[in-house]
Structures are given as structure tokens and as C-alpha cells.
Length: 425
Image 1 (cartoon, rainbow, N blue to C red):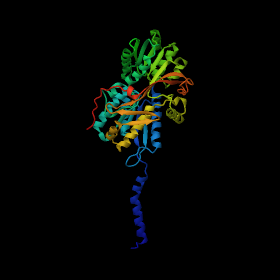
Image 2 (cartoon, helix red, strand yellow):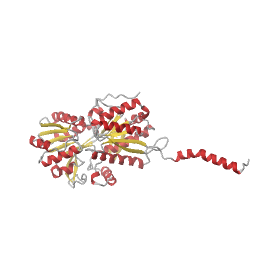
Image 3 (cartoon, rainbow, N blue to C red):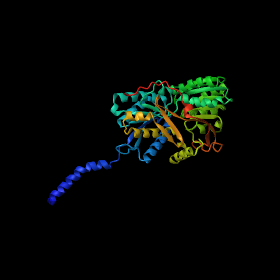
Image 4 (tube, rainbow, N blue to C red):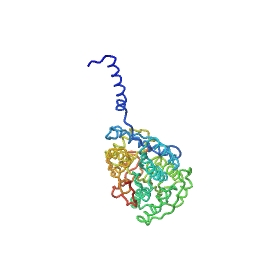
């Protein structure tokens, strides 16, 4: 039947009105999966937070450039948002609440085991109290061993080697260094720094019982502006080496002070390979600064070199030169696990993360389900001038880089755990 023109127009208009919302929904961009980085973005450790942000941003960009997270309802991008903890546990808790209110499903943090400890507890309480707004906590740098031992949590995954694993790698090199006859232990006075010194004493006793410990000292975290008194004590002790887990300005200021007082011993460090430390030491560090990491730019493989070069292309300023392989593997593991779960619901994603196996640029790692401690290779490097054998790349334009002197395979870096994981039923 032929409808009169006015009626036909009315029906067309009505159909268009009814279909418009559905069409708009079909064309609207997919809602992102929100990641919340909770870090020091102000205060004495702001540079460490900014270094983390560059790494995470680069990893997120890589996932999004290949189309995002593939899910049954369509691909979804990752969105990285920043929250300033100011390096303080109470500020981190406030940031966590803000992130959850903003819809974050994954919290990323690492710089400070003290902050990590409160986040582990807060995330567990949040997920029990309000599972509809549950979150996962991915940790890339907080390395107090208790976090995957006595205080392990189903909702927490650590992608860095913990302090005991890092110390074991360092002492492997120190064990063969017969020039070291005495050591001065110095660290930051909180759970991580205490764990580093405790494990240093234990491992020296096992692997180098002939080495005398001539100093054992903790200092306030992030509050010392003048390390000259500490450096003077180190020099006066006659120590042939310093062992420290210091990071950020606490490391840079310490090594600067050591140079100023003329200390000529070695530094066995967790983080001496960047964030100003090589430039602070200069020539005084050549052959005398040893650092342990999950990866170093001078690892002699073509894929590793290409990985590093692509980071420098993305962040070309010398002061931005601090790339972490583990942070890249972490985001890859998260993307893989969301896709495997077929959902962003935290329990299926966590179960998939427990089984994550990832590879990037020739570097691989697996998540150990028993305690959520990532297992990966560790490397130890020694500071030298750029252009020296094995030192193609320098650090932060300083003219100094790290030659790889030891690679520890994942099965040799692994340590047992005391975790008794409680999983949701």
C-alpha cells in the first residue's frame, strides 16, 4: 500500500530517531582499560617517578599501536593515568582511592617497598569489601622480599627480582673479586634498605667469609642532603667496597660525596647504573661501580640493541635515558592475560597472570604462581667509558656505560618462597 507522503516522512523520521542511539554506540570509541600509576611525582624522588612514567607510557603505546587489547566485545585501548604519592604511604592510599573512583582496574607502583606494603593491604581490603570495583596491583620495583613471602597476596604481582635475588647476583661477582677484603654496608632506613643489609651480611658470610664488614649503617630515607659525613666514615673505615641498595637522590648524593672525599673503593649497587649516578662518579667510577639489573643496554644481542635504540628514538633527551625491560614485560603480561581471560574482571585476569609467559626483544620471563614473583634473567654490569670493549652505549649522555660481566639465567636467579597464597574461591 502506498502511504501518503507526509506519513512516510514521519515514519522515516521516527525510525531515524530510534536508530540514532544504536548507531552512535556502534561508532563510539571503545572504553579504555584504565591503569593507574601511583608514584612520587614531586619531592626528592620525583625523577624516579618520571622515569617510571616514560617506561610505562612507552609500553602502553606499543599495545595501543597494535590495536589494543583484543576482547570478545571488540578491542579496547589501555589508558595510563598518573597519581602523585609524593613517596609517602598515606598519600599513596589517597591516590589509590582516587584511582578507584576514576575507574582504574589496575594499579602500578614500585618505587618504595614501604608504599608497596600499604598498597598490598589496601588492595586486598578493597577487593573484599567492594569486589565490583576490585583492582589488581602490579609492582615493578618494590623489592622487599616479604612482599612475595610472608605478605604475599593473590592481588599483587611483582615483576622485579626481589632484594635477596639481586643480592645473590651481586655477591656472585664479588665472590670472584679478590681485591675486596672488607665491606661497608649502607642503606636507607626502611624495610627494603634493612632487607638489603641483612641479606648482604648473610651472603657474605656464606660466599666470602674472609671479607670483613667494617661498617653497617642505615640513614633516613630521602631526608639526607649532605652525605659527606657518611662518605668520610666509609673512607676512614678502610673498606675496599661499599654495598648499597640506595636509589634515587640517596644514591646520587652518596656517590658524589664519596668522590669528593676521595674514596677509591668499589661500589656494589642495586641501582648504580642510571639516574645521575654514573655522571656523579665520573672517572672515579670506571671499573669500580658494579650494578645488578634485569637488563642492561649493552647486553650484546641485536634484538636488545634494537629495543634500546627504539626507546631512545621515543625519548631522545639524554636525561630521559633510563629504560626498564621488566616494565615492558609487565605491560605485555597484563595485555596477554586480559586477552586470555577474555574479560577485564580481576579474578579471571589474575588467574591468567599467574600463568603469564612473555618474551620481548629476546628477553623472557614467567610468573611463578606460588607467590606471584616474576622469574627472569639478571645481569651484572661494571661501569666503564663509552667506547671501551662491551660499552657501546653510555648512560644519560654521561660518557660512561655498563659492560655486562655476568648473566644469571632465570633458573639460577630463582629463590624459594615461604608464601602461603590464599586464593578466592
